[in-house]
Amino acid sequence: MSLQRDPDRIEIKLFRKYVDLKDKRVLEIGCGEGRLTWQYASASSLTAGLDLDRDALRVALIDRPSNLSSKVQFSTVKAEWLPFRKETFDIAILAWSF
Image 1 (cartoon, rainbow, N blue to C red):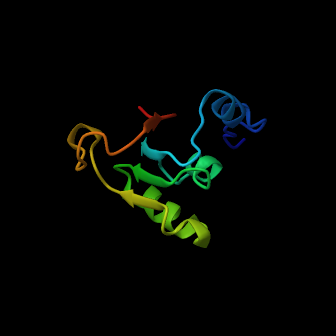
Image 2: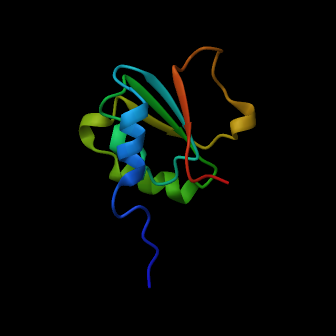
C-alpha cells in the first residue's frame, strides 16, 4: 500500500482559509518536491523553496510549471543559515518537515 498524503486536500483547504498569499513573498522551508508549493505559488509574487534533499529539488524543478519559472526558485539551504536579508519575505511556511 502506498502512502497517500492528504487525498481529500484538507491541508490546502485549511491553508487557503486562514492564509492569504495574494502578492506575498513566500519562504517555504522543507519544500521537498513542491507538493504544497504548486498549490499556492500562482497567488504569490515570489516563492523561495528551500530543502536539503537535492533529489527532491530536482523533481521540483522538473515539475515546476513554466508559467511559474520566474516566480518560484529553489535552493539547497539550511533553514538556520538563510541567505536573505531581514524582512525579505512576508510569510514563511513549514509543513510536513522534520
